[in-house]
Figure 1 (cartoon, rainbow, N blue to C red):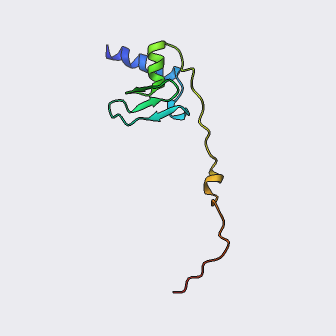
Figure 2: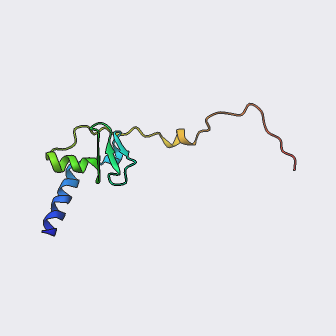
Length: 89
């Protein structure tokens, strides 16, 4: 019985997209249901895409890739100082 559950879980994980990369995925405040989907409006003990595949048998249709900022924009300073700071020690 445990082997069947592991096989089914692996098949489900192959079918569904990764919720961590979806823009609708969120972490909820509820410790019993730590993951949520903003698009479908539900909380879950496991990632929502796994729940959708398990219950519907279809891949999550609401999956949208997050837009990630490039590393160059993250390393750039937001503003430039107009004057230099002189410190005397």
